[in-house]
Image (tube, rainbow over all chains, first blue to last red; front, side, top):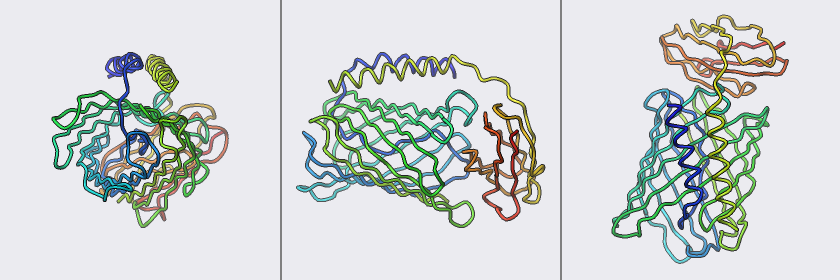
Length: 236
Length: 114
């Protein structure tokens, strides 16, 4: 496994010179951990404005159900909807995602996981497959998480292209109900940074309600000026 | 400029990953904790400061339990009649409480780091 990861890291280095393609890059930042017996319902909302090539006030909605398959594997299915100032909300795609926890938390210098996803457009012939590496490192009360994802799009409704997205989250574990942090995202036509707040409320037994809210500000003229992201996750 | 920044980030991320993977995890002292009748045994124990510790948790109950500690930044579900490993530390001196999320009224404990 170590050799495979080492090879992946070299691939990432080589991809640093590849072209990045269009797309919305701001999303949830994944952590590498999986719990057995866990199920979750999730809703994510992203609204962004003023990005070249993308309709103004684009809103992206994700509804998901996920469950763990073992103590290392977690699978999740999504319905993705999109709307904007000029377009009504419409179902855009369906997605399947699997997360693989590679190492035990705290076992090595950092904790590692892999994320793979396959999506299919609704009413068109557009496909997208992606694979990403998740890393998390604890520094006292701080936790730093990085996601690096490579995506390949293909189909008769789109030009085949390779995209990559890098995201970083630094989170301060102030309390279980409130954790402030900062996030950074980089992909083609979008580079941004901004504050986030996260937390969770414990419900009966193992049930939890997790939430995240962030405002990401574009760092150049091609990026959306402002992206607002919200996430609610019910674990049971 | 945009692409230059991204290229640099990706390069350093890959380099960092390669360095991290070349380090080998050091053998950590092992402490065994058993869960029985929704209680932790031992429920309190001491570990040295600034040392990585491997907790081997054996759940003797037929029901699952979740070892949870916000102070340790750990949560781990242990299926009934099975075992799991949790790595903690290196920790600063202090007291770190933990509990079983499925049976929090009974399954409680603390780790004394000194």
